Image 1 (cartoon, rainbow over the protein chains, first blue to last red):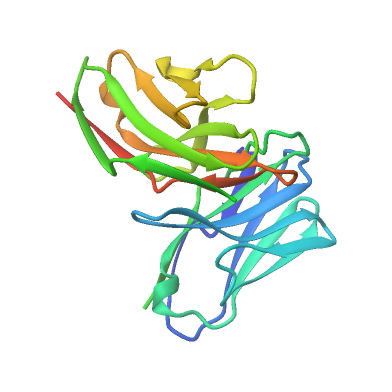
Image 2: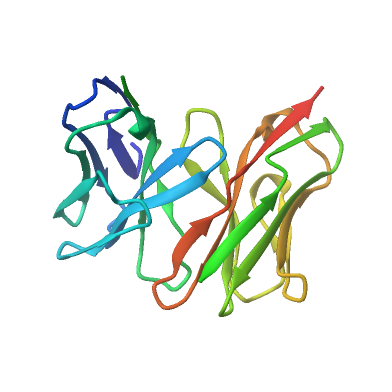
Length: 113
Length: 113
């Protein structure tokens, strides 16, 4: 089983619908992240959480919200999806060491029609 | 502030030829530097990392990178390309107390038979 699991792996939805992407991890890490990947833009940070009570906005948080339900679970919500939120979304984790190394899930591909 | 520039969004090499993927960074404090690889339909996995020890870093699958402070570079090399090396490669930098990663825009490596 993967250390960082994302569900769903693929989702097609319509404009205006609410969508939730879920992430769970078995690495025991405190820190969890949501990134968005678009072709040619690399990865952009949406939200990050250093522990259950510490949630922070990343560089592109508008239109997104998150919930840290437990140390191992971090979900990303799109309250009202729009077509330019079509992208590949990654959850990642890291521990408290100084390097910042990230461990990634396999991604959730979201298409908003 | 920190940033990463990857020169060349697409690089093609022949099988057996040298692979060179370029990465330059900007950081106001000593950085940690990473190369990640993304195979089709998969998440990112760590290839190698520089964390202020040896400036020449060896990673998985025969890749290595050299940290050059004077040139603010961390280029990725492999002496002989293999078809299985075809993937997208991301350079990333972390610095500061939070050690959050900032990613470059990625380089798609194609290996020609």
